[in-house]
Length: 368
Ligand code: UD1
View 1 (tube, rainbow, N blue to C red):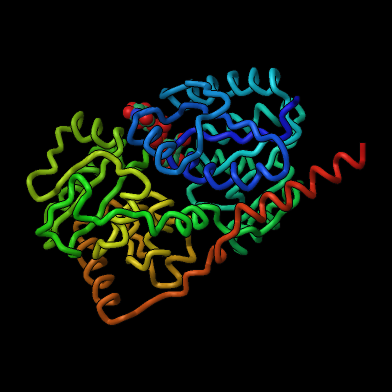
View 2 (view 1 turned 180 degrees about the vertical axis):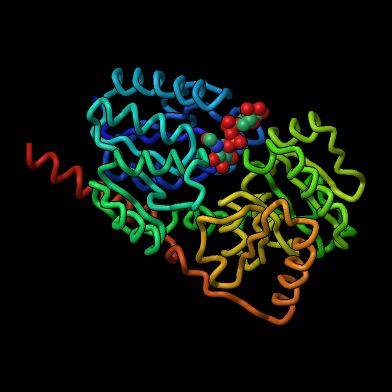
C-alpha cells in the first residue's frame, strides 16, 4: 500500500519534534518516517529514539556529516530515491536544517506537496545557513505551520504561495508530555551535588560562534570568570572546535556530552540561568520558567525576549555583558518575576497539524 505521508527529520531537535508529529499523523493514515542520519552520535540521535518511544524510522538515509554542499546534496539525492520508491501524497519537513532544505527540495521537484512545520521564523542575518534553509523551504511549501502570530505575519509579508496556519509549537507538546519524566538532577552524569540549583547550564553549537576561534575563546573566557558553577553540555562540533583552537575550558567549567531529552529538561529546570545559542533550549527555558541568555546577535524567538524570559548577548561582548545579563536574570527570578508562557500556544500543536493535513488530503482526494 502506498504511503500517504512521509515525515522527514535528521537532527536531534527534529527527532524530538517528530515523536509527537508521528503519533498525531498516524490517525490520518500510513506515515513513513525518514531519518536522514544528519545526526548519528548516540547522544544526538539514538538516545532520543529510546527516550521518546518514536520507534525505528521506516527509512534511514545514513548521510552523516559534510560541508553544506556535500551534506545537502547527499540528502537531496537520497531523499529523491526514497520519494521515488515510496511516493507519498504529502512530504512533511521540520525546522531549518540542511535535512529540512534537502528533503523539501527533493519533494517539491518531484511535484509532491510539502508541509513545513516551524514555518515563518526569520533572522536578520540573511546568509546564515538556517535562514537560507527556512526561506527556501517556506517558498516551496504548500502548507506552512507557523508557531506564532509573528511567524504568520512574516510569511504574509513575503507573499508565500502556500496556505499559512498558526498551530503553536510542537516542541511544547513534547515538553508537556515528558516534563514529569525528567529525572532528579542529582542523578544526571556531569552534575555535582555541591551546585544545588545555583549553576549555569550551557549549550553552544552554532557555526556562527563555534567556527570562530576568537568568539569561542571570548565566550569560554567569560564563562570561566562567572561566580557560579558552569555545566556545559557540548555538541561534538564544539568539542572539536575547542580542541583544534587549543581552548581549554579549565576546571571552572564542567564539560560533558549532550544530554538526553529528559535529562536536558531536568538540567534546564533546576538551573539558575541557561546560556545557549540553541532555539530549542531558549524555548525549553522559557516554558520551564528558567531565565535564559542567548549567545547570539539575535534570536528568532523574539517573544521570549519581549516577555523578559530571554536576553540576547552577542558573543563578542560576552566578557562585558554576560555577567551582568546573568545577574539581572537571577535577580528577576528571585524577585518572583514570572512571564506569560503561551507565546507559542498552549500545547496541542501536533494535533492541529494533523487536523489540517487530514482536511487538506481529504480535499485533494475529493478533487481528483
Ligand atoms: C545542525 C543544524 C542546526 C541545528 C542543529 C541541531 C544545519 C546547517 N545545522 O547543526 O541548525 O540547530 O543541527 O542540533 O543543518 N557531528 C558529530 N556527530 C553527529 C553530528 C555531527 O560529531 O552526530 C559533528 C560533525 O563534525 C559535523 C558537525 O558536528 O561536521 C556539525 O554537524 P551538522 O549536522 O552539520 O550541524 P550541527 O552543528 O549539528
